[in-house]
Amino acid sequence: MTPAGHRIPGRNALVHEARPASSGRALPDTQRGMRRRNLARVMHTVSAEGPLSRAAVASRIGLTRAAVSTLVDELVGAGLLRELGPERPGRAGRGRPGSALAVSDRGPAGIGAEIGVDHLAVCVTDLRGEVRVRVERHVANRGRSPGAVAGELTGLVREAVARSEGEGLRPAGLAVAVPGPVAPDGRTVVHAPNLGWRDADLGPLLPGDLPLVVDNEAHFGGLAELWLGTDTPRTFLHVSAGTGIGAAVVVDGHLLRGARGLAGELGHVPVRPDGPACGCGGRGCLEQYAGERAVLRAAGGEPDAREGLLAERAAAGDRAVRRALEGAGEALGIALTGAVNLFDPEAVVLGGALAALAPWLLPSLRKELDGRTAGRACPVSVSRLGPRGPLLGAAHSVVRALLDDPVGAAGRHA
Image (cartoon, rainbow, N blue to C red):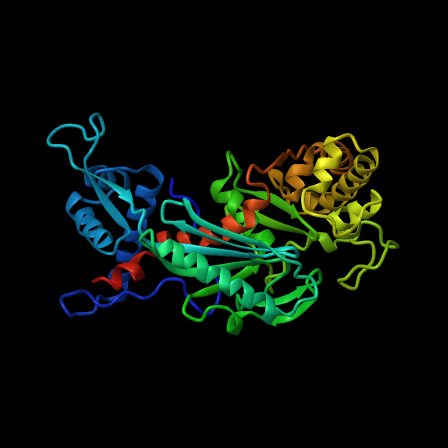
């Protein structure tokens, strides 16, 4: 089965329209659309099951071998597929073995970037989905201007691109994960309270030579879980946390964004309406009880302590931290109750920093959730991607856009 694709929003498309056919006559829209779909089917099939021969691809997608050969030649010429030589014994069937096809480890690549409260990160992922380059810098971004943060991130992007070009890769687009909701234009951060940003348009501040999309880190984390997770269902709620808490609502393999792109702000669901004030303007939000800074305060620690300290202290038996995490799990369970009752997911997946803290969060979380959902079982699992999810989801979103619509990359080499 072809994996569910993700069309990246925003004004700057991550793939380009193909040129007319080499005969000089433009293809009718219906033919052009069919060609785009068939190129995508070939790419997804080889990506999911390769190496495969042309005959094997034709058998799987229901086209003639001649039609598939024409499509494959175009994709090989564009640097999206490569031929490995004769197919391995036992794979080709009768007759002369065909040349095995694989997704190229060179050529177009996805650039993913992440702006965190305490770090910046960039990775380059090839069409096979493998991370080839990763650079990261620990930096306190709270209170810094969007321009200053974007400028430093641009430097990391340039460094990652230069390193990847040495391996024969070329960037096809840049996707940036941010800790806050993003407007439908795919570049403006509506509100990132933990950075102190509001209505920050990152478009003019990031590299102008790369097609760009900006999205909520929780959305990218949920998409990474959908694409890379083990046995992840098609309808689930992915919850991730650092300083803030976000969620991705995935329904039947598609991300639910909401009318204004603001769906998934679980961290600002009130769990105790008379609780402390939150940076969003509300009171008693989940983030004030289950965000990392809140848990550190409850445990008597410094709210700006280094990443990973909570898990280390909990594993060492620190009772204050374990009590704080028990309270955080209870608050999470209360907030998740509304989401579970509202859209009935097959599972809840904990990602981000929550993954490392799961052993101490889950008992109280499950107790609250089970007791408030009318006996309907909703499994809660832990993501194996952990805090890598948003960055991986960002990079993979560019790659999947190429797999979904490779005609643009092919057209540049027609």
